Length: 81
Image 1 (cartoon, one colour):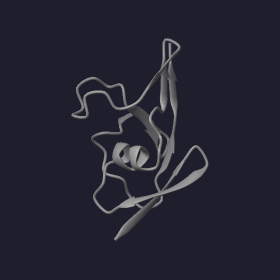
Image 2 (spheres, helix red, strand yellow):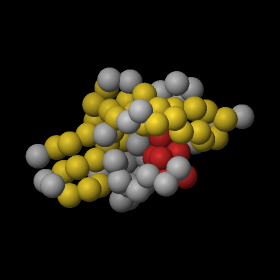
Image 3 (spheres, helix red, strand yellow):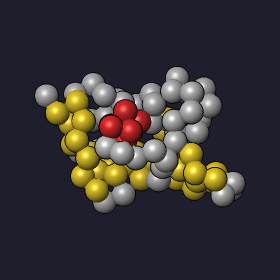
Image 4 (cartoon, helix red, strand yellow):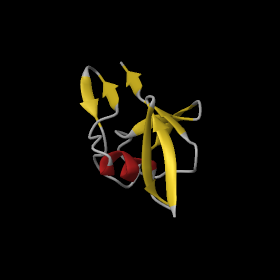
């Protein structure tokens, strides 16, 4: 079964049970957050480093590597100083 999410206005597809980060990576997205002027994406992949945080359905600071994607999720980039 597949899951469809929106990332910065793009429609992306993934597999049921896949993490938000996994879907982003599988669709060619390597970075999705800016911190101190540098691009960030998945670093540790286990929820410790917080490099992969995104906004999911309006909730900021969600770890993309830990959050299972749900049908219709709206994912947005985050920028932190």
